[in-house]
Length: 421
Image (tube, rainbow, N blue to C red; front, side, top):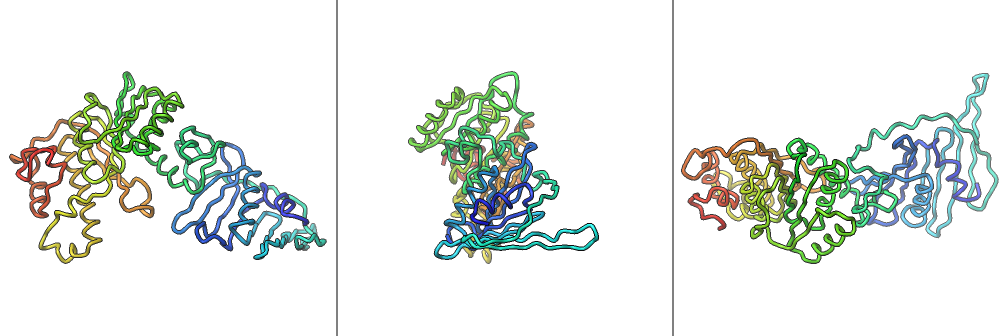
């Protein structure tokens, strides 16, 4: 076999079982990459699964694309490629000086008399002669059952994902951004679950507090308006002017007439009156509380919140019984974060919301990504005491010596402070 292209012609095709890139050269990249053929929408493509630490990043390629990817990887990132096929196996080894050694070996082939004959051969890039099997066995490519069926499909370019660097122009997910692609689709699954709560006979107003670069804001608009046909008006709010300006330009360029971005603070925002849904993703510390309070004041039907940086209770929490545990800073921080979100969820329950705390993305990526999903189902519960909240919540706050901001905002009569403190 004279060159790498001949090798790819013989082994990277529908007869491929799997191929593995190894011998990592760049310590910053993946340790190895596994390639296998999969079926997507009735067509064969090649999925590359890059193993980097605890993460596995998936990308799908055409046959031409995967061959280009393998050639680039052998030229820079990896020193070895092992290929297993239904009829032929092969290996490519790359020396430190860049010299390739290519080897192939055919599988034993059963003869009519029941005897087996083996054909094996190998060559270096110098082009030495070899024997090799040149036959194809029928193979059935399994459906893409080990890769999740996403709402936003791999292989179908989405304009905002291309501009935000998550997809290529052909719809291939960029390997380092695969976690973001998964996160976007995971979020859309939660939006899909609450669709029955959103009206179809009028405009639906959605506020996204702390929208940042607005990956999920654009995704919501695209999914609800372009894919589902909802008449939505989405407003994104953030403190970073440059980010807001960029997002506004993108929305205008896509013709998203009902997607708007404004510069401003969550606590001071007064632009809404009738709001159907409030989203707050990674609003830092008490900014989440102000967003949740706004949502309750507006009577929002749906709240989706991914809290971040729950520092407030970490500074307050004290309990003699828990002191043996609270003395360890990292444990205190994690307990305070979980207690903060638990209290937020319960306070929303007392305001008439059915509330869940869900995993936003896999916990292996970050321990902070929990999502609070609240759907208003009833009127606010009457408080069991003069503070306007339940006795159990009062007991909890007193036991831990805490005064959460959301409690002050929703129950301004609390002795711990007046509204806004």
